[in-house]
Length: 559
Image (cartoon, rainbow, N blue to C red):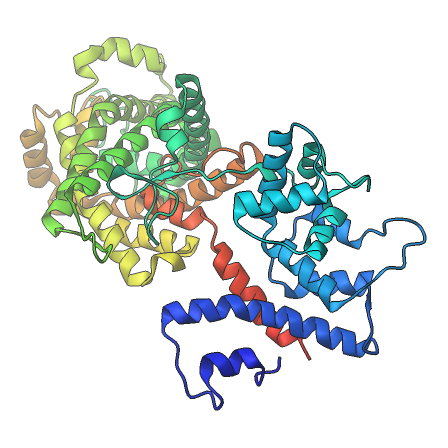
């Protein structure tokens, strides 16, 4: 690239002493692309002996150096010979005409389509020139009109029809601007940089109930399947945790009739005994309630957290910066945790009883006795009744409210620590932030989880009975010591990160393979706010950045 050209000297001075402010640099940048393309053509022309360029070399310069994203069929029209004996060569004037077409192809296609609609038929070159002047306020030359017709006039009859434009442009030619809901709920074509628009005007105001239901069902199904895959992947850890927490240290080792109660030396011993006595499938007892509840449970939790954070966030309209007072951030997380208990507790108590049921059957079989008849999900629900399904709900609140109150602020803080700019967000950052936040959230709420497990299982003969949450906590402290409150803490921490990662991966694969048309949102059972997931999945390179990258590449390509 010749940096001594007139463009550089006019903007930066004869010796390059001038500096440009941002608004002036953007104007320079626009002209720079034209200068790059012009220099590329002239160098190619000099290389060919200073004459005209053949069609292939001409098309190569256009595609590589004009900085425009050329639709494939437009490129085909430029490269394709008009007939078998077509040996046309192109001058610098032709280059300027075609460069104009590529830079203004949305305006050109819009003018062509509008003129065809108004005339209700094909248009000539003169019709097109009038349309450009009337619709776009642009006076175009004869060579520019000829360039347009060489591309769009497919049958070379001197007229362009609407069908020919649509054949060349596809959807690009008929795309219209769509307003989005921006700041303050007002519609705009250009939301502020970094502002996550809540949706298009069509999506907010014009979607039918059927379209809304279809979108909801598709996303819910994708999220439920992905969440189910993530939950299944780590479910054995959850089962071992439940059985380990339910073991009463210092209690009787046998029932009154001499039947030995389950006893584990460690969580690993629990795993090995379960596989030996019940087989690998024994690690998945009680999985069904987990799969049923995974989608609505997390959907409720994440939605409430997002709504409360949005309500508590202070937004600076001038700087665009968002800030939330830390106690309110904790309150938003607590509200999210409280909201899910209504759905979580019935599923938890059924799941826990199914998890421990296999242990009881193995215990009777090992003693040579007939085990009690195994209960199904419906059997447990009928036995407990509606109110019984909420047994231990106070312990569930005591676990889930602090967990979310700790997790979501810790997640936000970890993300800020890992990534300074939102646009730099990568999947590894989400996984790391989730893992970091899960350590204090899961470990510090383990005592409530132990109490909840003890209250919701069916106590066997010889095991302690608990009258209330307070009685349960007092008996555990008195009989087993404070360490018993943290049984399974490591497994609770260990479970969260793999489940999070598997869920995100499964959702991404399902989204691509099954429903790429569905808007990407956070999958269920993945504790990541919607804004982060959208930031992660949205296009990393805007059209301006793509143009900038092409221009820098072009500078290196010109020799």
